[in-house]
Image 1 (tube, protein in one colour):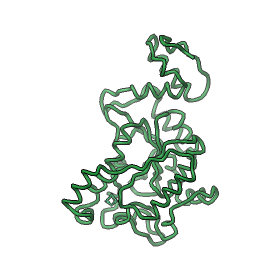
Image 2 (cartoon, rainbow, N blue to C red):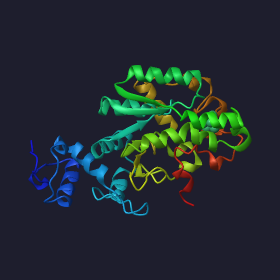
Image 3 (tube, helix red, strand yellow):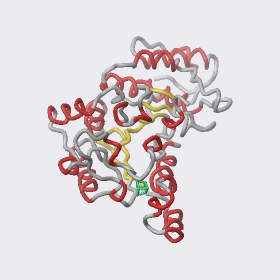
Image 4 (cartoon, protein in one colour):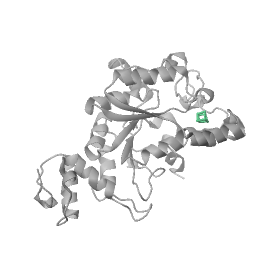
Length: 303
Ligand code: SF4
């Protein structure tokens, strides 16, 4: 075990992606003294460095520890498990986002690769009872560290006091989603280096150009560069359901009642066969705006 005062070039590692990170750190930090606590193991060292990395501006968020374009090319078209493994190799401080719907397949895969992995979901206060029961079932079934995130009560109370409980029917979903979803998400993401989502290209026209990995332009800040992995990007809904059946993965009982894409109770409805799955969400709004702010970066792509 290295001691206080040792410098990075004394460390020698072989093989695997985390080694590449260490070599990079070694070059960058050559001759610099490092605290004892940062040596515990490879990924924590990488984590320590990546947390301390500060971009010059939001236009220059390149990470010196790996080349994002190379990683994108390597992961393009890979299977979800391979993408998850890469995310876990490169990032120690990351979490899986779970929506309470069929993205449970990610929880299944990730908990096999890393028991005890951090998973979070957003409790907007407006979910279906079935979704709450499902979230609890997932917590009981898997070896995960599940966090249920809540909105800031002051903001929520102000909104409801001023506009009532169904303001989204009058002036769109952005404000309500901003308080009930985006706010809690932003607070959690500010503490992470990367997150893993269940987004797929076939879910929505706004997701057609979804990459397997990228910088999260919506939630990165000068203080915290955030990466986003989308292991299910190339999967279809049929592949997701094949996995659920093959591995006996629990699923939200709303799926048996005609719901495909599941969100909050007032803003989600069942759809007919052959209707696009996002047509059951915010059906009173333009299809090109059907992102709740969690993946706002999708709305800017290709424009
Ligand atoms: S989906 Fe509907 S109820 Fe849920 S946060 Fe958005 S606007 Fe509010």
